[in-house]
Image: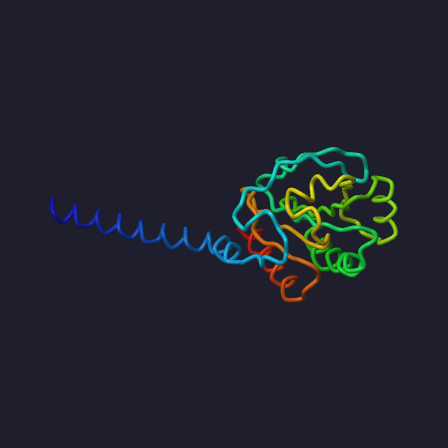
Length: 191
């Protein structure tokens, strides 16, 4: 009888060790993403690990949607504006290196949100820039203010994980941050 109990104890122990290993490995992306410290000068009002603020938005094609609709997938919000020079330099990189790579992945979405611009201006901006990912206008800055201080610079991105938590942020266009963003996207999508 002791021999049988010992055998089951060993099996149970092996199962627990394997489960813990798999759990730690699967959550590696979360632990990497949540290690990012947001510099105070970035003027975000959200933190890594926070639940994404609740909001509706209307895409440039007129479709109204809600951020909660994307729970279960990975979502990148890219705050932008037609009058922002850094945004104009940044958007082609988001198009070519992120959107073109992941646009056929049903578990990934990328939305540009134009600050203080009309839907008509947003659509014209999208066409001018040759951007194929969806843009949404934020004419009064209501969405922007859920993520950053109202008077903060527009150029920023927020990556949201499958659980609806803030996983990574960027400000302006810094190559190191952009590469980090791409790595965290890859990591989250591989889960």
